[in-house]
Amino acid sequence: MNHTQLNSSFDDIAADAPDNIPEGFRPVKIGGPFISHNGPLYGKWTGQRLLLGFRVEERHTNPLKICHGGMLATFADMLIPCASMYQSDMERRFLPTISLQIDYMGAAALGAWIQGEADVLRTTRNMLFGQGLVSADGQPALRVSGIFKMGQLIGDGKATDPLGLK
Image (tube, rainbow, N blue to C red; front, side, top):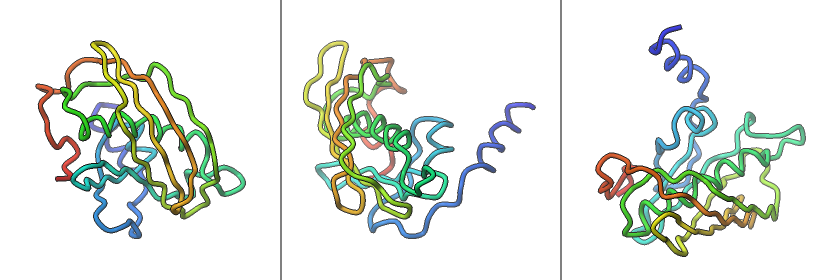
């Protein structure tokens, strides 16, 4: 299989985008093929905060028809780095996860709208520390905190709207 065939196979696997996405949210491309396959994720810039979300589809669920904890963990792992691209003055960098803590506070049923927002608490020369909250249909679902390594620059590091939300 050549590279072109491989890329098209990812497109064939990805589900059609749900049509019941809250107003102002747009599809975002982040995280490479893994997130493309497991998404789609949506973003909204409020002017002060980045909101990230997705609709729980059948493929995201466990046998009880609630969102699988692994999908929620994947979403949480993207939330803080994405928020840092909009809510801090740092250069845009790849931010590999060093540590991620998740407190699961509630279930997210099939069809639920999952939405998260996060804050950068501190940056050092080598690390970023952040925390976030995730809700399912407006009810608390996750509390997350993480430490991320300051990786290589993405492009020139100066993108002010890397997800195309402004």
